Length: 95
Image: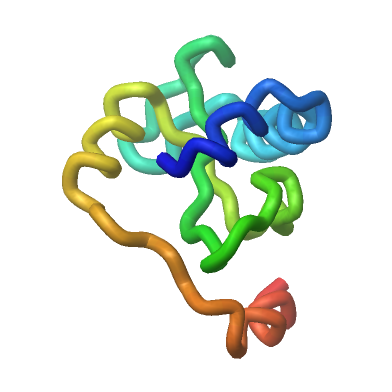
């Protein structure tokens, strides 16, 4: 994880977005389907835009709830999940 992004996870704006995603997903891991207490869950970015964008500046549709085990597994298997912002704006139409 990039250094500038690490400290952003302590920001109240990120905490509010994380809570919104966990509630939306009913505190259930989207990968394994297990319901867990919030301290064992991650609001995981499906992708990151290239460049220095704040972690809370993503639409919740681009985040999923993962338990710690599935989150760690995902990061071990997936090395690069950065997308160029070109064309991403149109993804909001998915809703």
